[in-house]
Image 1 (cartoon, rainbow, N blue to C red):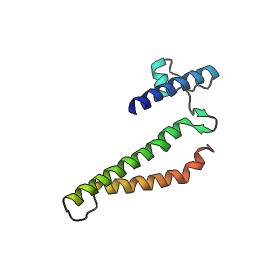
Image 2: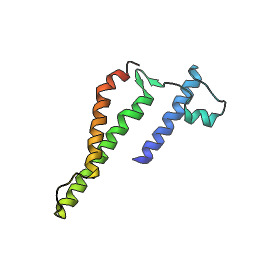
Image 3: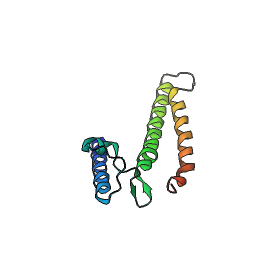
Image 4: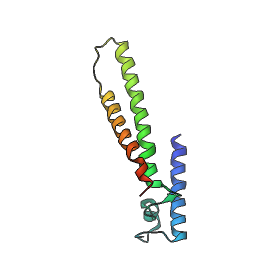
Length: 116
């Protein structure tokens, strides 16, 4: 899955660079192709009304982080039940709680992302 994600990220990077250069939507180009390619030639690349930078930085990673935190909390709970430890609030639970709060904030403000 990580290989596919990395290949897809490189394809999207090259695609946004080429489309930005072809349609003249570049912003503050340095003249160095590798630098401009990975730093971004287009200020706010969009597919229709979806901002690619916001979508890739907010939508997907926070949900993945939430599910990773959830799986760590479940595994920690299984281990503590197995060892018959007293109930405690583990760091995994706090991480899960923080992820839930952040996901709520993102879901609340996500309709505004498409208005920008």
